[in-house]
Image (tube, rainbow, N blue to C red):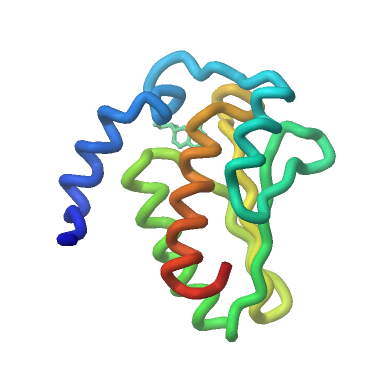
Length: 126
Ligand SMILES: C[C@H](O)[C@H](O)[C@H]1CNC2=NC(N)=NC(=O)C2=N1
């Protein structure tokens, strides 16, 4: 299958209802809704406040971690939804996602997380 280019992907994402919190009034999820969506992801968990989701990976090395973050950044830009990226102790990465404008979790966070999972699987780091 031919992969869509960045513009095609952006157009497709613009039509995706899961990204509406990025553009309109963000709808904050109830805890039970967030937990149900969390169950569909690989390795993500709620943080202590239950207002964010987070996942961590150990990369091969520092450069691999930076490359991973660059690719995550491209996904974030295409969705206009941006995660908090942490790189500590040489190769330990942690990503936290929440919707700033909602002060908590929305569907857009889970959509972004699933795209990051897809990338991680492609890179063989899941
Ligand atoms: C103007 C722009 O669309 C908004 O600031 C977007 C950008 N990326 C974002 N990312 C996240 N995680 N939450 C937001 O509320 C958010 N808002």
